[in-house]
Image (tube, rainbow, N blue to C red):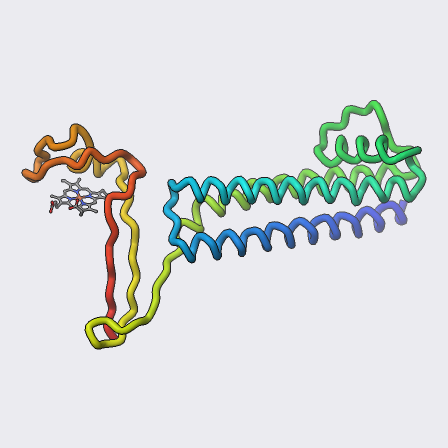
Length: 200
Ligand code: HEC
């Protein structure tokens, strides 16, 4: 039993390390792209970035399933790659059909895989949430020469929320309560940008 649990523990640690490494790598690249181009929350490019993150995460899960499958194969649990891979997938996703089961000798190992699968799938949700919320806050600032003086400059996008539409929404051209014409904007659209210059 101890052999199973230590082997299981080691592989769970390896799975976590693999997954965190992949997610971290993708997150850093995505953040770099978001920062460099100051991508607004609602742009298509951001959707593409989320899609890439999901695809990378999926690939990482598949890789882990393969690692566990190869271990079962090495231990002689299954005859052939297909049943080992099938068993590993069913366990990792915690579906547990039960049509193929591990022998009593190694079944605790399979439990460890199920625990790892559950944990790592949870991590994906957390990661995507982070991508959707925290990274939209990322700001870009630079120091340059403005009107002959050194200054920190930054630009902050202003998106229309529901509360903005009474003055900036539809119908376009209608006079709002401030006496200005409405712009015909929609929720989530870029209304304008605030430019901030801080002289040193
Ligand atoms: C009570 C009415 C009202 C509300 C609500 C309102 N604004 Fe405005 N907003 C104005 C007026 C008036 C101007 C100046 C219009 C002009 O100079 O042509 C303005 C100007 C702006 C500008 C400058 C660009 C432009 O069109 O002149 C931006 C960007 C802007 N508002 C964004 C927002 C956002 C984002 C919200 C919601 C968080 C919001 N506004 C809510 C009345 C409002």
